[in-house]
Image (cartoon, rainbow, N blue to C red; front, side):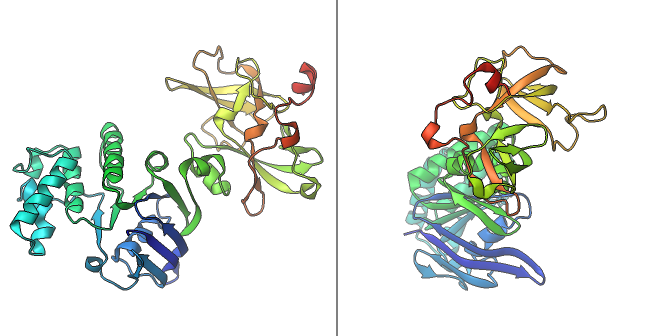
Length: 393
């Protein structure tokens, strides 16, 4: 059983806390991604699991055994690093088998494992080549094969695709997913690329400043972020976030208002409202959310065609001066994803509505999620207002 458990795992460096009371339960055969911005503590967490770094406090278990103070060689793990670190004077066979030869495995067993690993990572016929005769993707597959022959309980991967070009990175992440499912080995994968995490993992653990923010399936983190940080970090492009105040039946966001159903206990509270670009709609478009908010006017600042869609950066009326543009801080800017065939031009005035069913609200003080929908279940499917005048505010 390759389950991994971290209980209050903490790593301190003098007065710096790199990882703060990390608690994770990684099931046998699970693919978990540790994701977060640079310096958040994800690599340190991986190093504590591997034994390359010992925790200051807390415990680490692998396959039910406490390995907190055990060296890496006694943890039944195999690592794949960002820097492939192949021996340039050894051919592929010798690079893959190096660890087995150090452990005095029988020659027949080494041959069996190397041939099996080479087949899995599609390196058959290349075992006599040197690293400088291989492409970047092939070299990375050698590094993965070197880990596979160990037949470990746990794979640990620290940004293994970071040095590859974009096209090869997409190909290799598909290969790693295939391998992990085929082998069924518990895998902990570190990346700063949230798209990699979303597409590869069974669960993603989002870390910020050494603290675990949320650990859940990718779509749950996307659709139901635990707090404002997760909401802003997960998703490309990022969620639109606006600060406002709950006032009676609406949330007042300075330049527009959104009807809300939070309850009277939130009256007067400061909140942050989040809207993903795909949940904002132009009134003139053919798309029509089932539960539209009251509309408001905005000016088109910049259009970014990206093929299957166009990103429109809008400035709500009253927020734009001659010196402001998309290059500013974006505090009062709205990003909308629209169909590339939409007839729209820069500096044009448009009307916008939000899908109230997918509006996120976060506590203004703590950043914790309050709700992920502003639709009252009792009235779901009904539009706000009964006339065009009421819908458009």
